[in-house]
Length: 303
Image 1: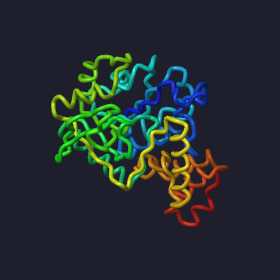
Image 2: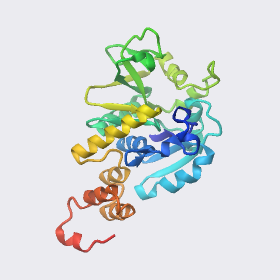
Image 3: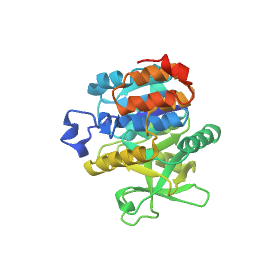
Image 4: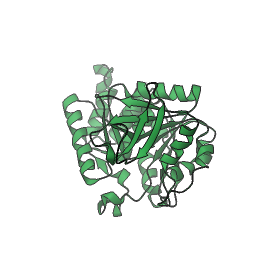
């Protein structure tokens, strides 16, 4: 399975901030927003990722994430010439993803919860083994603001409605999806909506028609943010700060995840930590690298 992170678009809901900077490069507390969505793909154990970006933003992403080799990954970039919807963005990756199943993450989604990696790997294995597609449902107080999923006791999706006046459940569909190898075949059948965009809802409906769309519900122990508005952006940053200061663990630290996944070794992590040696982020990475390092080894290491 390969990963697709959607980080294009114009970010108009965050104007005037995003008139000159892509929103996915803006900081959520102490890291670029893109780190949080990329980390979700990494937690699923996926090492090959395609990031969909605007052509004008390519130099900035290549400077920040390069080709991913420093993380033991392979990161490629797909240029979306015009913001014509999420399915359009996904379809732009067809040549890079090939005939592989894919995990798709919206670049402004931030998700926190216990054993996320275990959950993602379970869903990933299910899609690779049995096919179909998975969405995630998150309980919200006002479902009329979101895409809402209705499902049966087996977890099979019965309907998905965008901002319904009379919601059939209180579960919003968040921006994390798992698709089987028929993703691009189904995506090619999607037609533009009334607003002229190729909607993700239309792609999901292709799976719904054949009865292969399922939902995995996120319980009370999860926190989800769509950092696409000024208030939700601030809310997400405050949440990350609170969790990190209370627990001592960082959210979305891609170097740490790469290390714990065994994709890079301790010395490689230390070198990455030295790039940020004057920040709390660098100090944290160095602390992670030294967890099982004896005192003598520490004395010989200097940034």
